Image (cartoon, rainbow over all chains, first blue to last red):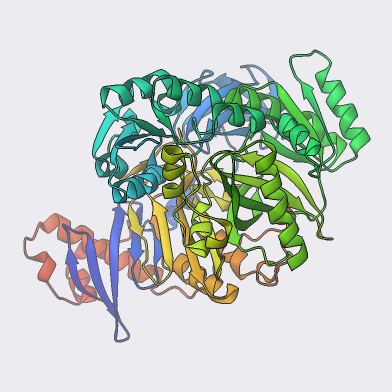
Length: 134
Length: 504
């Protein structure tokens, strides 16, 4: 692959491979990942740039938090700190885009702290509960 | 007879743009309304004037007093509600009329007569129109839960639980077995109260493999016409996903009977606007009245494509002149149209709503293609409104070609920065069920069309992408002003710099 040109203002790169020309727009770029839009195939591609050593260092499955999978408003919290919850029990309900979405326990867990209040607006990946597995 | 000179469009996004287009083409001055969140959307700037609503989010567009006050301040003489929000609110319609403004919709008494689904079924049943056996109960009564559960047992599972005053797939759940009843009941009751301020819940028999077929009608209180049917059987959680016109499943006898029945329904309530009569059609070509929608529908574009009639222009005409602009003989149905709704949702995460900033937007062009949207790059998609991002409509003289055009359009559509259902739509259109017309309302529930990974051979390897990333990083660091015209081989450049030899 050859980089024919790169326009840092428009974030557009022209590439060449096997005699074919490609046009790509960089949507975001940081230390960890490169997200680009390929005009030829009309795809959005996310490439992790860090070498694999980084990810393997991460702790195994032991999860200590429940984070919000979506942005929205907390409309009901069914659990409180100090409560033991069985797998699949509803933890809380988040309203997003006019739909109610239930967040369920992914496994048996113990609620250490509840980090949000009812009617709070939450962002995606925002911390909801601190937990202990089991 | 009145003339609409200035109109307030009490809605947002793509439908506000859609209504704006017809109104401006008719020489009507348009007023857009917007909330804090929507202040940079393009519909705000396409209108002749725009006014900010005092409240934020959903509440802004539901603020009846503020909307009427703005209409008066702007010297408008009509209000078009679009769909959703206040479109089927008879109290708002009455307030608009009381304020000496033209209401672009049916008379408030008619909206009220069919707004409640139980009420509507009673009216239609009395007019000899077949309805689905069901039971309605009021949740303000303490024993309503037991009553409803008992009704479900008598009717027999599968059943549907829905708000009698709902719509748009909200506050509605399919219950296939008794042990799911409790959970479904809880969410339907809560959504019904929140979104429709209603305590009335219907327990209804779910007809197996039934199709959703609806008829676009129009009336002026004396004369009634239909603009043929639409099939909306491709639904997910009672939310329409793909709609087509015509419904090729209907045999000609059933089709005539269905269209006649829709007209009879309009007649039964002296309907005086454009509207939609929804039916469920069973595998043996029997049909049952479901509900009536007293507004412009999301999927109106496929009727426009197959009849060549601008439905918003018809609404304006009916509101101003109180008389139908067409006779039944003026209306013909030709070709085949498909509409796909692009939703901001993640099919790989059980269709969870997806929010974020649009970082790339590619919308194609083509023959017989229409894309209704109000999107642009760097627009923020918030969790406050409906997840529908855009509607794509294709038309062709034959179904196969209309599908091919739609699939190709979806292939050329890209919305980056958040998740959408585009690949899911494509998979449905290419499925044998869709192509061979074996669809029904629970198809997406019974069969999973979502494919997590596409088998396309990647255009570039991971190493090549990493090379590109490093190159970009390097040029950024060097801050070369002439970098945009530079041509050089990447590998050479990289190896000149020692830093790249060591992994990070």
